[in-house]
Image 1 (cartoon, rainbow, N blue to C red):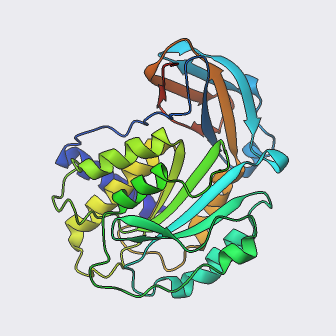
Image 2 (spheres, rainbow, N blue to C red):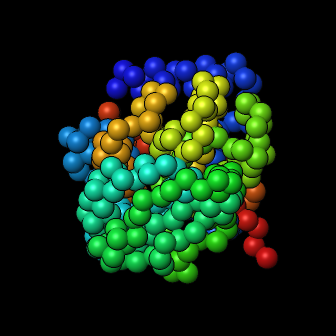
Length: 313
């Protein structure tokens, strides 16, 4: 954990040093319209604090710095799980799934029965589904495959993410769509080591307009072995930006690649197991700042800091 804290400190320091061209606020969700808005909220804390579900009286919500009118607060669980999940991997990686497939298969097969899951690979700036999304988790796990490095296949992971957000592979409605993206985070379409990447900016906007939570895992072995310190740091910064901007999380092991995905998948599963759907009403439209806080000591709530409310036509 000390290594992770140090690495995050490096990321924050680098962001300040480079000069962030945009803040990691969350863009809005297009399904929200005047009168009602929804967002997914994740509760973080130790197991004892999270043993009992939070009630509506345990939270404080503000919109535009004014107390919000909460009309719904429900834990995603059982028949109300409503999870659609895409695991997306950089397809230029050199065989990295060889050792990770058992942990990934275990994670997929342990998902709630109603959860729809799919495996996608990033190719040439787009995403390619291994098979349609399914609630047959054994079948979904069989879609995992070892990837071979293919010259020229590397594209912007943020192009891929934008495409996933714009063309989500399931037509079924869902209030909880989640992507788990594994890549080194660097953007070959934007070789400058700063935080002005327009494709990253577009990906953040597109994911939030689609109501998509993004969890990112840094893995450096992507066929470009001489990534360099600056490349590693900026790649991790980009992944941190996407995750925090969407209400997800960023996982990394210092500046290196994890030997095993399992501890990060465990953290990811805990997040999924402690998510709530918050529904509120508001007469306003456009970009609105939102604050969601816990009244329970030792519990922190993670959610969008800004949502977009479309005007009624």
